[in-house]
Image 1 (cartoon, rainbow, N blue to C red):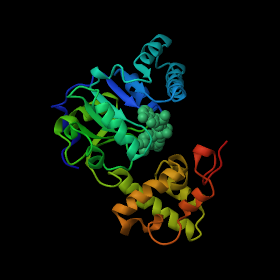
Image 2: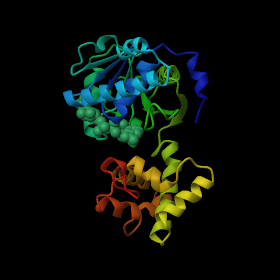
Image 3: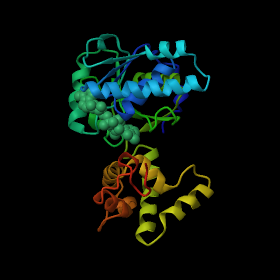
Image 4: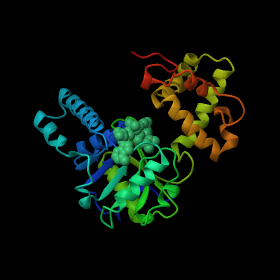
Length: 298
Ligand code: NAD
């Protein structure tokens, strides 16, 4: 962590128009959050049905606010107009900040980021919601790497307050400032961190998952471990949290962490043998995404 997030905001250029690339779990959540806090956002995907799904989720979340009496139906309709779904880059010329939230594949991200960089204004800030790819690495193909940084939201976006703003080697202060200010405008708590495997949260979280996996391999009852961690004061235990994250995602992120910190990650399969979490993937128990992980879901 370099400077406190607040120190950047004084220099921030306000984000009046945002855009998100990808209308999936994260992109849809980011569009909802931006719209609900009043910043108009273009939501671009390559698939019509992904856009439909993203919009449906937003409608559902806004409808809940109406049910709870926090919004009127008129306010809901107005806020929904803040999300402009699109399959093209038509209106990207006026965008102040773009959040890339397409699939976690460096080749796809490189293609999308270089494409969008050629279409936006020179001062537009580009950010990526990647969980595991180095920001410095993603900046390598850009012609304005100073305008690029990480903007890492957590799932579900509307409930998780934290946003990691990640500085790559060439990221400039203006990019960090605008991203911090946009995160705050969305009602989030931004922290500015350096680029490293796992950034901050996953760097702390994954060795914990590794410790849990080792306990299970040694015969511990995962439900008891969850209960113990809840009594310890955590809102949920590691088995349930892994079901939420998705076992395949956890294994993938664990591999990235193991490359960066082999000594700390051996317990997640970075050493010899398979971890309990890898075995879960092999048995197609991916978590809530396919209704079975450590627990069963309906
Ligand atoms: P997802 O699969 O739900 O959504 C990805 C979307 O990107 C899909 O709708 C797909 O059609 C779209 N897409 C693919 N290529 C595109 C392109 N060229 N242009 C526009 N859209 C395109 O994935 P997700 O879970 O929302 O993850 C998105 C990103 O967020 C990944 O980088 C992931 O690592 C990161 N992330 C995910 C989580 C999580 O818990 N799911 C948490 C934090 C960060």
